[in-house]
Image (cartoon, rainbow over all chains, first blue to last red; front, side, top):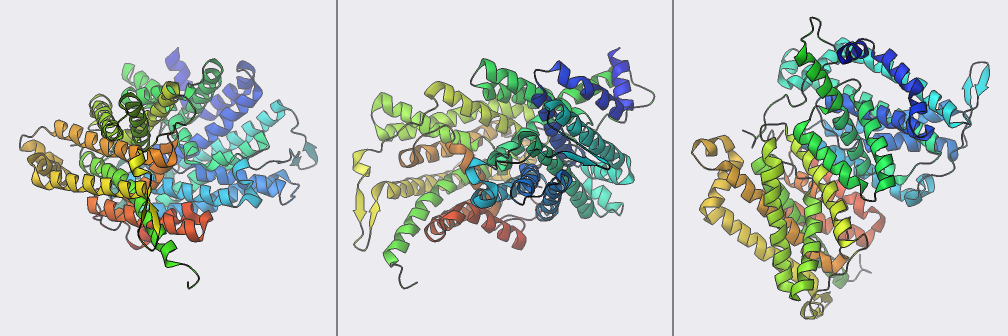
Length: 341
Length: 294
């Protein structure tokens, strides 16, 4: 049964996503949390493009999430733009441009260097936003983002109830998922994963590794930016913490717990993380102690995450004739580094 | 520049040196651990924070600041050894990302555990009165405690340098940084060496936190900011290079100190601008070898 279900999910990921998330807001405590799972899930999905599929650990993705949020927020709250679409587009473009620049500079190095560089550039953007308080609200965050109606050809839809907003976010996320699926199944997606497995070999095959990595990074930033733009809409507010490195760390935790390098892992990770946080913060003050311990346990014993481990386990029990496309390569693959001999 | 008094500049330079040596203590430990183990220790900031808390507690029990300083650093070193054996050893052979992620998880746990044990409010750590005065250089007056920090760090670094260059264990550590496989093939207990190095790195972080405690106060989040700056120092100096860590630490300390004087808003940003410039000119850092640690 589990196997049949998993097989169906893997074979029709978008359909499975739509079915699950249509009923999702009715099974969890409140709609706001459901929408948060979607925005953070999309953020983790974007992060997974660069970490899970390309094999580069970015510790600065808060920059793109935050720029998406601030781009949308500033356009709607400070510039007086009255179109939701232009607001969202501004956020996404801001994240995209930052992705190109940060990616270009950080992709000069690999491995741990890359992680530290992205972290440092993320902090650079955080401090810049922190000091531009006329625009960003500084330490207090950006307030007063209006909840605009959605302009569709012919009619407008008010997004005035949490449930309407939730379904709007869900439609956007579904479209993003469709786009990602196309990209991952394209020759470009294959090259990206080839780079993760063996960069030198991909280069020897004639692929422009730097360009492909930059494209993957930019694409990842675009997803994070869209997620941030939606989060700014959801909250009508952007906290300065959206850009702080702890937000980057949060998305790393979500992706790893869910399963890096798998299609659904990031959403499962985001859901588990946020539901756990929501529940733990009610029953105890030190909830991040528990999250930290759970994270350590995952790194030590389940580095493939919930979804990755489930897929592995099913594959080991019955080796299917047609291996599921969602079964990703282990993220541990790759060159052994110094000191790990 | 005429209107600026030179004494102000000199005083700011020594303040920068005092800040720089803290970066050096953290970056040398990070670099040592990274060079030998390939581990990016994200928990370094939390170990720094714990150094200050342990010092506070030892001081409360013994009343002796010197003993507290040594005890704080020593206890963090012991915690580092335990961490290496229980948490990092199982990760040998895995991608280096996993060690980074694990130590990040550990840093969350440590910060929250400290809040549980010592409370959420910050604590005050008082330097002994013998160190709380000021030194008059004639052209300027400078707080004694900052000079004390510089002195302690200098002695510690010389001690570390002697240990690495003059002892057999130091020789094996240096060899392990160059080629861990060969060290193992020659029959040395490489796991033991890893444990020692992680313990030393943790102890240095603990000492840094203990030294900073009387200046900036002791609070659970004190490691969250400085860890990023320490990473920047390591990257600027070149990963795995101890000389690079020392020089970059001092340079960054001065950069922060002088931007605080001339353009306070940019003091945090300046660190990252220095890093970006260095990396564009020399992608492997000031003293790093290109292609290493990728």
